[in-house]
Image (tube, rainbow, N blue to C red; front, side, top):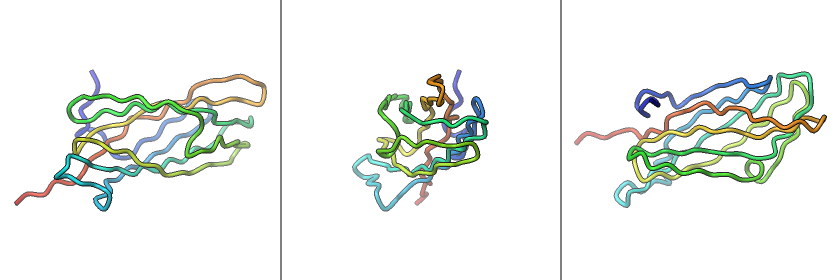
Length: 137
């Protein structure tokens, strides 16, 4: 059974086949509208090629779950309009955002990677929490 979002950290890290994926997420109150049921989170991802081969990120698959267990799947080419090529030792960093209808949730997923040999494989994006701070009146 998956961990509830409250147990997860807003930071995650995973290494698959020599490709490291690090994520940090934060609530963006300036873009959120809690009274309208909209919480917005920014996440920043760094992908580092620690393998001996050049690779290209070709697509992404995110699984986003809110506090009501509503799950959304986002699949598409590349990230932020790019399909970065990473030589050994190179990194690619980008930021994106995710809206939720609840003040907490979680994300995880995979990136599809292609080696110069043509081999394709998926790398893991470890689960991380989306959490807005609570205010007590």
